[in-house]
Length: 96
Image (cartoon, rainbow, N blue to C red; front, side):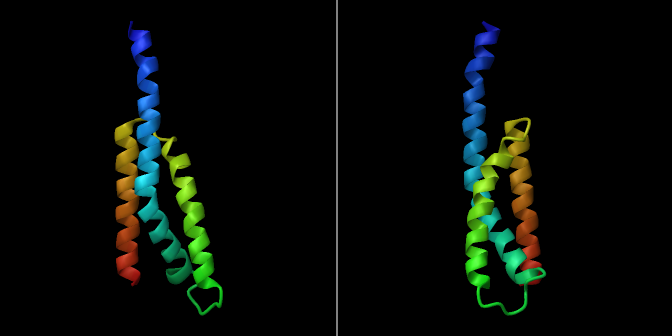
């Protein structure tokens, strides 16, 4: 009975981690894209900088659910994404 319960709980953890990566990965991808394109080494004027920032955000957002599955628990997943969002937001505010 315990064995059946742990197998039934596994998909819920996967769904939670995937949704966490999608929902909290979106603002993180936007802030990281801005930091890399406008606050980082490529801060100078470039004609394609806006296009690079746009496509970089898509790639980062796509990688966020993949990274979410590396967390050991639901709590660790959400805490790490919230801390990453907070750090990116603070860096964005600092460099703005």
